[in-house]
Amino acid sequence: MKYENIIEGKFISRPNRFIANVEIDGILEKVHVKNTGRLRELLYEGAQVYLEDHIDRMGTRKLRYSLIGVRKPNSLIPEGYMQVNIDSQAPNKVVKEAMLSGKLLPAGLSDVAYFKSEYKYGNSRLDFYAEDSLGNKMLGEVKGVTLEKDGTARFPDAPTERGIKHIEELIKAVSEGYRACIVFVIQLKGVKSFSPNYETHKEFGEALKIAREEGVDILAYDCIVTDDVLMIDRQVDVIL
View 1 (spheres, rainbow, N blue to C red):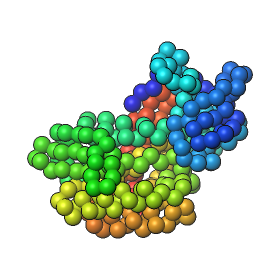
View 2 (view 1 turned 45 degrees about the horizontal axis):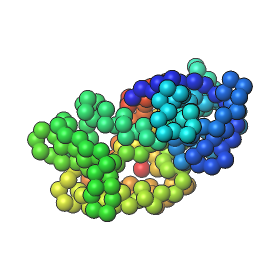
View 3 (view 1 turned 135 degrees about the horizontal axis):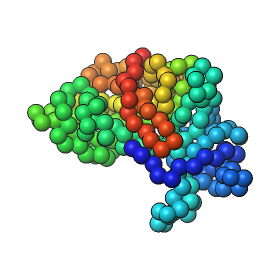
View 4 (view 1 turned 120 degrees about the vertical axis):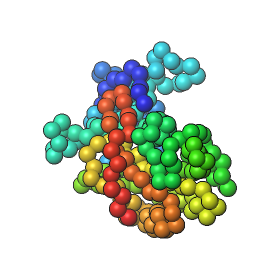
């Protein structure tokens, strides 16, 4: 996926989950944060961020800018930083693009002949439903990952009972004959593996282990990230 009208700024503060104060060209601006997660390791005073400017597409918007990414210092790579996309709406979009193009095919699908986002199943609204040309049916969840430590991507950065509920729904779906998968979209480049964040939410990690044992395909992919592009790239190891 590609963004329009990207500019740089300096993060100052975050009064609440939805709003941040960012310095843009020497002016303090109130901007929309496209992620309600904590992001404490990314959004700190002075962090270099990048934003989408909606000046020509305001519609009913109240705020001109959306904060979509941040540069995380990392002395181990040539650039000196990791580019991290924090747009929580982006992972679903890039997974859809990758599946329709055939770049991402979870176990049980030969291709993707039909794809529907936001699919109601049981007591949940799952991220997608897909069918292949052979009639195999799949339900899936997508999780955006922005937390990285020592080369390992981790999820979640805060307890998520909703996440466990979705895992349980996918396990049920497998028992009813569906294929099922969970795709962790690592919104940065440079990690070696993905693991659940047991320190933050042990129960989520344990639920993932059970899901894998019951036939849910657990996948993780890193991304090509630039100021204005986010694209699924390389599959990485999932270590539960």
